[in-house]
Length: 368
Image (tube, rainbow, N blue to C red; front, side, top):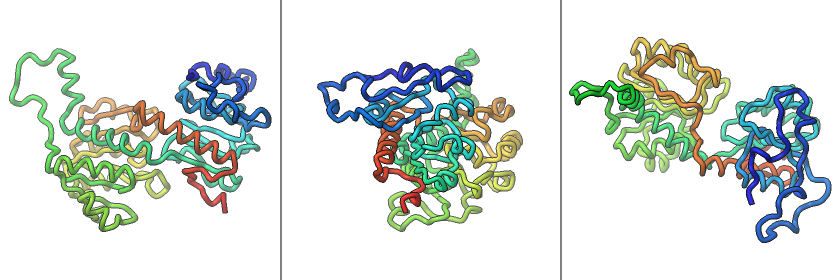
């Protein structure tokens, strides 16, 4: 029997009295599992307290509820810092989605032992501060690789073939007859794809390019093995060659101090006037103001963006440009993938709370 995220835990008000509004629920209060499965294993005393920052699929909530006392924000909105701090004062586990966890919050959560991030990127968490406090941080890699690669390639195709412009053209009633010169785009088949960052998602995008007979170039700090390069049909090049030769430059790097504004005015000036930039990684990897200027001047042909520097705020001039396709950070947003992410986060959480090494620690040094 599922638990509706909208009613799991007590309701979460938007005021400062969050501790009053959110009460812990335990496994003892959950509906009996179907056929009694797992009922005999429910602990009755001393269950660890957990806070879930956003509504999760019922299956994941049920998994956590079998072994924890829990409370959850039922609104799909980011809590104010004071609300998040109030919710975390007593907890040992935090399931984090779309929230920032820094020194200030950690200082108000003295019992916290694990932060299970629902996502592969974890730049929203001060991992260094967590490690100092012996708090294990986990993420959810692998399960979202293919879905995010799908979205990156969808952005590539949409901006190259002007799909959003074409949709708007039809909906606004401009299509009265067939025209030879209507909405010409750019070919994808046989072009050069530049993959900046050949990790899991970068590799998945490269595999998709093979279906379009694309030449695949890549640059990464760590070169792939010869076997990987052969399987992907990918050629390692230096970053300048990547920028100059790519018809489509797809970014797949994590956000670090070194990758902040990895693509700025200098890099954009190296790209072909007919090239397109695709970013489904992290917004701050691209200097958004420099990108706007490059798009306005047609220094590059277009961009497909799923992430932005100051999400959810977008540079206002990006919104007005016709040669950009914009999506609201939905790289992993499919029913199957979001469920898999939530379930993996739950497994990471429970393992750490039970003293086991979780499947996906990002700071394994806490176990040394």
